[in-house]
Length: 173
Figure (cartoon, rainbow, N blue to C red):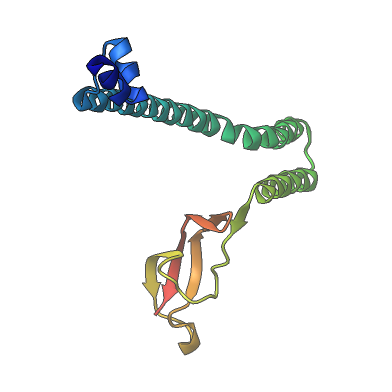
């Protein structure tokens, strides 16, 4: 009768543990949870590492191919330069040669503008140290030219509103 009372006092989870031969061991449960968490952590770290490597590979590929579009569009200008060069050898008419070279330069500027290149306006404007590099200062012819750009030695350029080359200028003093 005592056996029946002992069996009746066991709850269903204790019965399962006794049947399977395991006891409710909190240390083992904690170790199991820790192993699961560790496994999840290792998988997450591996996944992040793969993502980082894939992103770097994609970035390098983008850098390699980014200039391809610009180069392809400049090939047409290069073809025009080759044609102009052959015409210079054959023709004696200087006005035609000048006109051809002017057309090639206009086409080159047009292609670069389509790609986002803009020339910075500098001559006659106020000197701005963030946009211009002062090469020299000369006495201004008029008082109103003081602090203004008198001459541009080398043009400055913007690419999509970002300065890629500062203008080298002479400033009136």
